[in-house]
Length: 406
Image 1 (cartoon, rainbow, N blue to C red):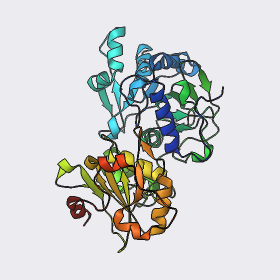
Image 2 (image 1 turned 90 degrees about the vertical axis):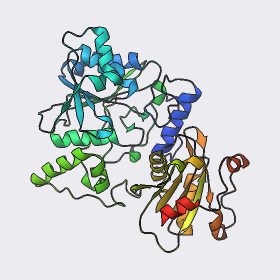
Image 3 (image 1 turned 60 degrees about the vertical axis):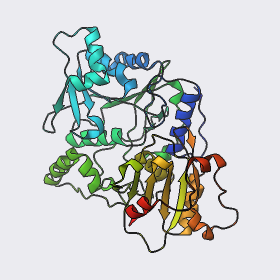
Image 4 (image 1 turned 180 degrees about the horizontal axis):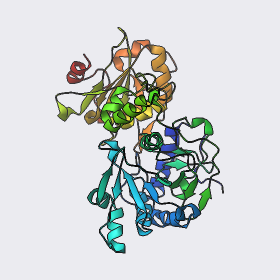
């Protein structure tokens, strides 16, 4: 079946996400929460598509099923509970552990099981599962932004589904025989170049849509465990369970060397830096700090939509190979400043950031006014008048941001 959404040659993961999100919004194919940008889309018909998980031959042979907490997967969680199988759901952003076991009330009826499958039910009827628990997950159901018929999957860009799989593999909870299923709208099935997939990316065995069940016959291997060089100390601080897993693997004699800031991300991409909040938090300003060369070239990024998180911008920058040495975030003023090591690197970043769109809003990238002496003919034009009226002139950072940069 020919994909509805055409993907341009050379498209990045972020380009594909943006294309799918835009299409779903334009065609009004989603339910609450909207807009779908930066989310796993809660597409119309999701509950019915999820119910097909119980029709898979492999489902009858499973005892323990892990289902992500995304809203569009509510129907899959309900199907697992209705079949009286063990339902495991990851904890939000892995802050308090890997996953929880959902325990419905004794003798729960269909309506009560529906409640248990909801996001509120996941909070109210869950029991934490420790690392020492002997868990054997037979089936994993993940959300996706885009997926190919060959089993290549793209999530929303934060990497939690991939990391959860890697952690389960390290625990011995999953292996090559564990089946991975994703549930999406038909339009989310697109052509994804295999070269975009990294060694840490989770692939899928089945795709469920409102109209189809697709067996992918995926040839790409699934991650065999945690790739420690793709993580850094900051990630371990944010996800305490990673520290425990690392200690266990170190005791077992495995190499658990962490990556540095430049090696922990995808090859050629910079890892996001720790975020330093300005004391004047009402200004919504933040900077990422590292030791900078004496001379940097600064790029102004305007038109940042209200509600966009700095982490979402960083993801987009990394995926376009445009991660800066330092990012100064001024979300309240709808802008950010990106510092690069020299004019040539800044020019490459400017090229990569043309046509960048986030949450349905086009962003404007150009050299900051203080850097325009470096600008050569034929380079970026000025931002639109609308963007200028929305944001302060891009000639300098605010005094508060300057203080935060020092």
